[in-house]
Image 1 (tube, rainbow, N blue to C red):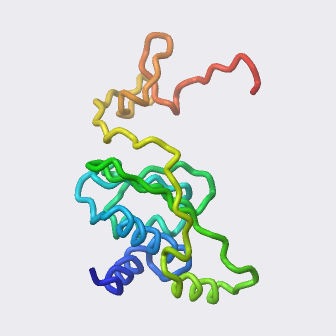
Image 2 (cartoon, one colour):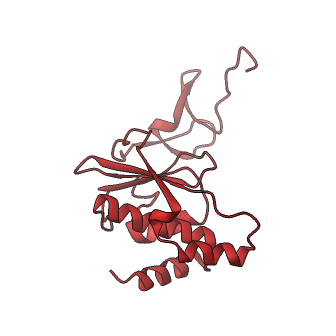
Length: 176
């Protein structure tokens, strides 16, 4: 594996080099090392990310996790944390970024992250979320209000008609 080429591919996909991309790059490499992963052409590798920041792009490039394949899922918690799962073996790991030194400029933080080995950047923890089921395909039906095709799993029955979530009227009896 040519790590420099992988980095260049990540930068090309993301559009620029930055500290956030470095975090995802190092997390993906560490997950590969810890779980013996390679790039997923199917759904054999799954990533649940707890953020929607730059690093997710590196995970897509390196591990082949993507929204479209259903093996990249967002559990937004505002944390630089990533859970990786290998379906065949059932093994998993959660990588959580350790605090970085305070008072670093953007450039200094980038160089700090680039200079560290993944094991120096992340705490290795057990995953807390169960491995999600494989992506399912759903039949789409037209919404009776707007007419737009909508996956059956996202339709609601309202007054005997199928309506999409955008057209459905929420039912609230109590202000929560």
